[in-house]
Length: 107
Image (cartoon, rainbow, N blue to C red; front, side):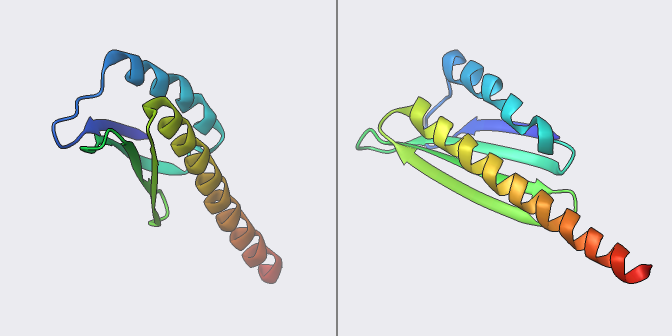
């Protein structure tokens, strides 16, 4: 799994948030073989609200886009990883169920 973390519109992620993201990556251990690329973008608007976005590219060609926003960047990142975990698990289950269905018909 290739991971890219960047800030936009003049926001640069500091060392503290990068460590926080690195700690949260363990949540994706059970689906890391399904994710080809994970791009995380962090931003801060003029009103002080942070947004965290993720683009997920799965190995079988599907893509997912997830966005969260909060006045606390750590909360936004935590919500983002909860949604990434849910989306990735759902996609993995879809593929496994589809493959299981195909195997039943082949027998």
